[in-house]
Length: 448
Image 1 (cartoon, rainbow, N blue to C red):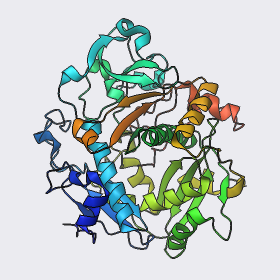
Image 2: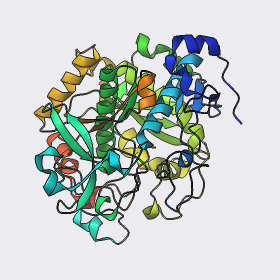
Image 3: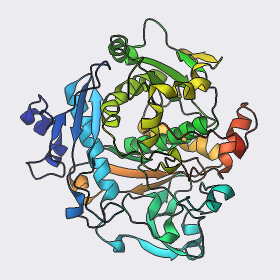
């Protein structure tokens, strides 16, 4: 059992109304505890929360084999220089995970075909899809979306067109047990965010979808991103996290992954010499201040590294990878260092201060900035409100962002959505050269 956090419960209860989320105060999360960071990593506070066995409350939340999820890690995690902030991040991520799985019944959704829904729903022809070669492979778990077949839809709101817009439930909820008609998408938490401020939640959700689009394309196309040169002295937003990094055994490289959507994105590669399980680790962050994003990649690696080293029962052949941690586990081994040569040997570089930071400080202005950039590239942003009644009573919003046409990050090796036009259009337009399906990186996605 992990040790408890050294925090004053009365202080937390007075400052954060949603402290009631935690047990034994009758909440949704069974407490928060410490997690020891990976040996040799930056010495940050790491907190974890646990949702418990969701199957007991929501029978649809089950494993593929029909068993309950009592042994599944389903809570949240957070890290920070301050223990209270680590706690806060873990609690909010736990609330986010809960809302992403919780629904009362099938009555929460609308069942109809894409043709019947018409313009009220997102266009199924516009979403990412597998290539013909992938669909032809019997091992591919996905089918092309078919507008003539009934599926479940979740009500949402188009921020772009300011109107109601429905989204397939397989794209909005986890553990929704998709029918055969709905198996055109990978169930994943991309684009879900929680916050006490609705605009801030929307910004985080949109940024995560943009982040995953960037990291999916850069890996599949092996883009030689420019390495970010971090100045000395460090910017204030980065200084403390960088200091902890410098005192560790981790060497961390940062790359500018900002795409044509013009929302700053930092891709990170951590290297630890002779580490038996995680000699390489990648993560990514999208937002509005580049220095803060670099710091975020340092911070968010702290809870991920120990968790990834606990995985077991990986398939022997990476063609069979489907779990979120499979690719990270394989490519973390020291013998796979060369898989990242396209990054570490990139001749390109950029100063941190030369990455354009959008002039949008308020969350509402940041939403407008993102919508303008998406519209300029022909993309629509849709938000679905996943907030449950009990979370709303505590002042928490949970939303899911969906941006049809952007590239999803897939951990399913036999279904990487290689038929998505953006995968080929963006590298060409960005000056990286033409890309064909035969040129795609054959190795699994290392992000987890």
